[in-house]
Amino acid sequence: MDKLEELIHNDLQQYLLNVNEVDERMPECPDVEGKWEAIANAYIPDGVREFQNYPLASLGWMMYIGMALAKMWDDDWQYYAAKDDLYVYLHDKRGYDAMDEYIRRDVLKLKGKDFAATEELVSECASRVHNTLMHQDIEPGTKEAFLAYVACLHQLYLFGAAVQLKRMAYHMTRI
Image 1 (cartoon, rainbow, N blue to C red):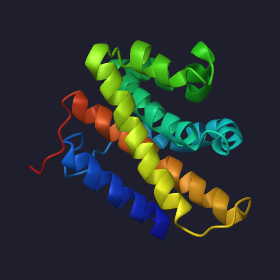
Image 2: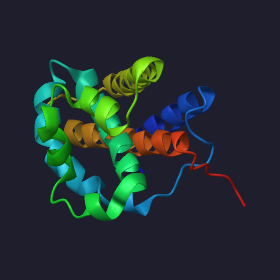
Image 3: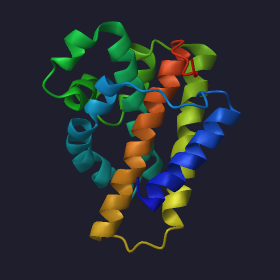
Image 4: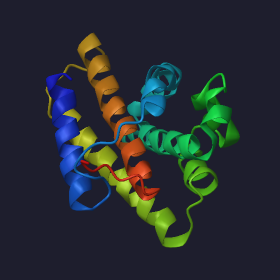
C-alpha cells in the first residue's frame, strides 16, 4: 500500500470504527476483493468524467459498489460472479446518476432511516477521502493524479465491502 492509500485507509478505518460501522480487524473476502480490478477498469471512465464537477459522487459511488458486491456475495455469489461485468450490471439498472439510490434501495434493501443514514455515511467517507486527496499537492491531469484517484477508489471499495459485511453480521474477530 502506498503512502496515500495507507493515509486514506487509516483515516477511514478510524472514522468507521468510531461510528461502529467496521470491526477493528478488516474482513477478508477474497471473492469481492478479486473483483476490484475489473470493477475499477469498468468504473474509471465514468468516475474520471464525473470527478471535476461531482468529486464526492465520483468517489462515493465506489463505496456503494463495494457494499453492493458484499451483499451480492452473501446473497448468491455463484450467480453474480458469473456476470461478465458487475459494474455494468449495477450501472445499467438506472444509470450512473441514480446508482447510489439503486444500490441502497434495490440491492441493500434499505428504507427510511437506514436509507438516509447510509447516504450520510458514504457522503462523509467520500468527503474525507476527497479532503485527503486535495491536500496531497498533486498536479491535476498527471499520471500521479490518476494513480492517487485509483488509490482513493480502492480504499472506498474495500471499506464499502467491510461496512456491508459487518451490517450482515460477519464480524471479524480473532479466534
